[in-house]
Amino acid sequence: MRRTMTHRLRSLPAAFCLLSVVGGRWINSSRLSTHLENDQRAAAKERWEAVRGGVKLQLAGEHLRAGRIDDAEKALNEAMAMMPSDAEAFLLAARIRLEQGQLGEARQAIALAVALKPEDPEVHYLAGEIARRQEDLPSAFEHYANAAQLAPQTAAYLLAEADVLVAMNRPFDALELIQPRLIDFDPNVSLRSRAARVCRIVGLREPAVAYCRDAVRISTQDPKLQVELAAVLHWAGRDEEAIRILEPLIDGAEAPADGTESDAVAIQPSTLLLLADAYLDQARPVHAMRILRRAMKESQDDLTPWRLFARAATAAGDLEAAAESLEHIAAKGAMTAETWLLSSYVALRRGKPNDSREASARAIQAKPDLAAAHFLNGEAAEVEGDVSAARAAYERALRIDPDFEIAATRLDMLSLRAEAASDSTGTCHDGVTGTEP
View 1 (cartoon, rainbow, N blue to C red):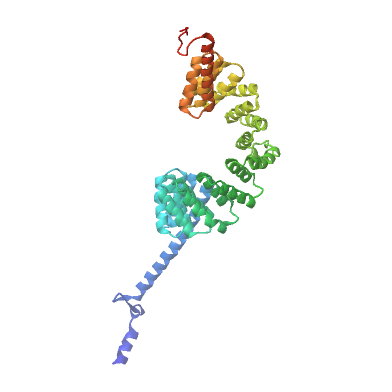
View 2: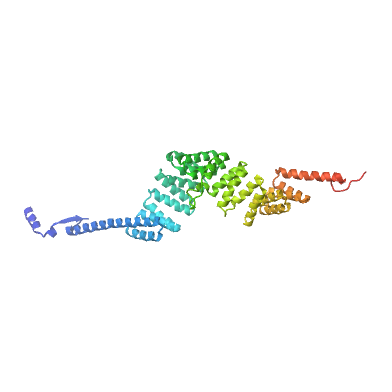
């Protein structure tokens, strides 16, 4: 019987001999072969689409880096049509939308990238950047922290995390975050500069100086870092050290003819103003005037050097130069309460009490609680012989600042003069002429 069955099977056509069981059903093997071939073709097509999509994605990235945003978007759309669930595509989409200023769409794209690739630190970093642009600081901090945790040796992620802590008014937390990691990033200048700036925010002078010195140690030839150290030293009250750093930078540098910044960084107007301010704090106004003349020449639209020059010239006793600087500021319509105050002082010392009274009145108008302006107004009134106005001005100055000793002294002197005048004319202090009893 078995032999007969075997014979019958051998006699069946080949197409019906090869059978398989799939899902509990008998199927024709030729259909299975066709199914497998279709799967293989689909897989091959998918791989090919992924390759083409990757090329398009790379092209989109190149367009974005070159600033060709429209071309980048077109190439990205083509890539996403071939690979609709690729995290890198959504990451690039977020970058393009961020470049276009479309923050809402950028955030949607980066959320999809995070969902598809949650272990990618760059995805979290960009998510943090987008959240920060939207002023969602807690979310930005969370993403930056994730990026820093996933890639602990990437300084940029640590810096971003610290920066957002400062933005959240948590500078001490930022400092605690940076300080223990400095040993892990010994050659990193940015972390040390950032630590110094945070120290300035919280008022830690010596640590700020130390961190800046460390940054200069790492990059000894960087004039920007030397200027930054000088600024920290000046802020810390160590002006002599600041001057020793800035003088050779400024005296040994010349602005390049083409106006580029790289060679002229040490002689930017802000650097000149820094040195001038340090000179003034060291009671060296003539040196400050020399530097400020250069700043006034190199930055004619900025009136800050002119204001500082007027102060330096006044301290040096060069009242004509001070008056000229103040007139320039007034002509530009840029007088402030402080410059009006300085103008009042200069006019009074130049023998122009009427101009002094007018200038001090303008200072008071701009800043009513400026005690020095009331005092100068009184001093000018006293020079003009208006004793009652002088007395009233001194009294106003003392009401604003009870410790204004020179105003109290002038007020006492006016009282003594009035008593002396009363005694010499036989008039009582209450203004009634005295008679013999």
